[in-house]
Every structure is written in C-alpha cells, then in structure tokens.
Length: 79
Image 1 (cartoon, helix red, strand yellow):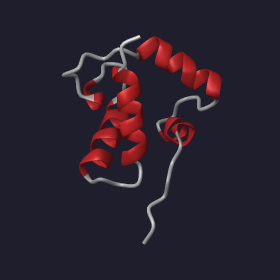
Image 2 (cartoon, one colour):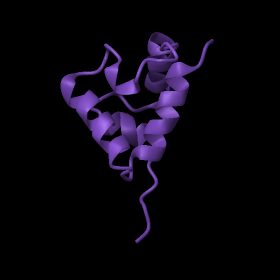
Image 3 (cartoon, one colour):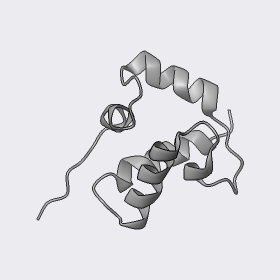
Image 4 (spheres, helix red, strand yellow):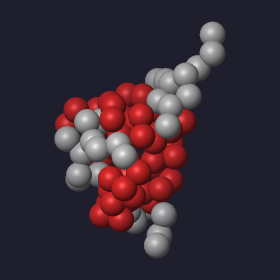
C-alpha cells in the first residue's frame, strides 16, 4: 500500500487554515522560531483539535507525518 504524499498547502487546509502560498508564508513569518525544545503540537497558536491532529499523526507515523515534519522544521528555523 502506497502512502499518500501531502503538501504544506494540503496540511494547512486540513488544519482549517488558509492554504494559499501567501497565507502560508505569512503564517511562517508570524509563528517561526519555536524554541528548540518546544514540541510542534505544544505551540500556543494551535487549537486543541489542531494540536491533537499534529500529535496523533506523528505518533502513528501516518500519511501526514512527512509534511508535519516539514512544518516542524520550518517553525523551528531561526531567521
């Protein structure tokens, strides 16, 4: 069985966020630079449902895990 490959845009839509390129870019500008030891799902800007989705998908190594990892890296980048 092949895993589905999702894009950042798909992930943002899944999270109920605006998913066009400008919205994603603005999200990263606004929310980047999480501390190294901060878990992605613990970031204060997620709703409970968003945080639960992110955490569960990573723990289950589900289809969304790869793109969630990309999101995690982007939000931990130091600008």
